[in-house]
Length: 187
Ligand code: DGI
Ligand code: FE
Ligand code: FE
Ligand code: FE
Image 1 (cartoon, helix red, strand yellow):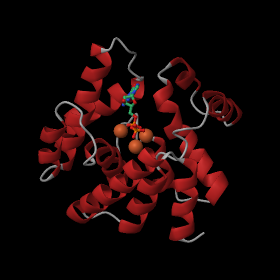
Image 2 (cartoon, helix red, strand yellow):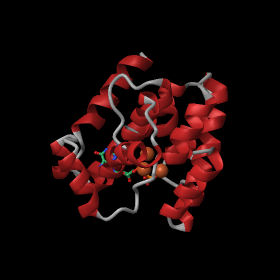
Image 3 (tube, rainbow, N blue to C red):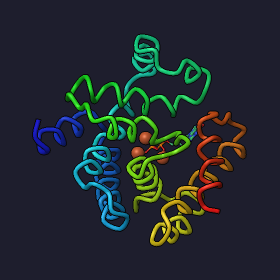
């Protein structure tokens, strides 16, 4: 499928505001790709597809988690995490995307993971700092992203952890592992 048809298929799957978010993530991710030397084509595809399943009903995502043997512990953690793991399966099924780097960047764009690839970091960060985001502290992360990718990723994970703790929510273990790994990297 060509880029135009792919974009149209994604647009069909998302409400207007989420599609606009996706377009801003693509632009932001491509800026980061140029700054930090990543493959623009992979960055573009991963960004375009990252929230493909965001509006699937919970039951539909749960079925994919069970049927595909995705990490079972997802079912005991925040439902916000599911669309990322399920999204990687869905874009392979639906569009025949087989590139492991692209699929991983989609899969881990919400949770993060230890030893994130350049592509993983760019998608996670672009999702966090795209110009429509208004999280507390996002401006500091945007500033860091101008110079140091790892420091920016660490700060975004720290902010997310603080946000989850303030709201009394569970933290997915992979997110904590991702954060601890980034602490080692920025030393
Ligand atoms: O899909 P988006 O809204 O564009 O952004 P996302 O995929 O990064 O989802 C982020 C939400 O997931 C964010 O509001 C925090 C929430 N969340 C819930 N549990 C966890 C979590 N995020 C992380 N990183 N780790 C968690 O355990
Ligand atoms: Fe997402
Ligand atoms: Fe995110
Ligand atoms: Fe997103």
